[in-house]
Image (cartoon, rainbow, N blue to C red; front, side, top):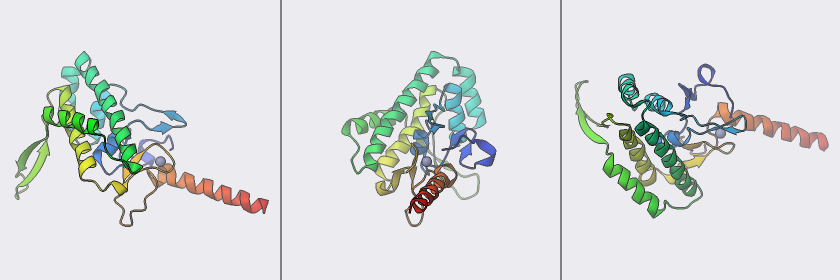
Length: 211
Ligand SMILES: [Zn+2]
């Protein structure tokens, strides 16, 4: 995938990729490979908060409040490290799903622990006239950030059509294919699809020159 961020490429939002169509997959994609090197986008607690904001999980006010209260604390750093660990554990399970395997029991147990400790809460939103149920989470402590990620991982494992959960054919990014035909192969056309087409064209040309 290319190194272009921001303006020219709509796949990036505030320095993060949202091409997964599913929050837990977008979370996995916070460690992409750029120019041949793995890049940790969640480099500190501030970056983690920026990802939550970019994913519309925290308002700027909520993120600022967490940053002010916990930003430099050991507790925030510990949560950041645990988040990254969770991400890599989820990656192992997602790779298993993508190759036709199942989610390990140990991973399910661990996820259930997180769901019990940091649950998503339900409320009725009535501001637009017709009341609607929405999920939310308390965001007073750094640990609370586990709630939406764990919930989304549970949804991914239990409710998403696994035949449509895929890794990009060209890079390390994962996505949930919501296309009508279900034939999506790339993280995105801009990042990998075009590159593949160029490479395929060059290969065809090489073959035809040889012939
Ligand atoms: Zn890709």
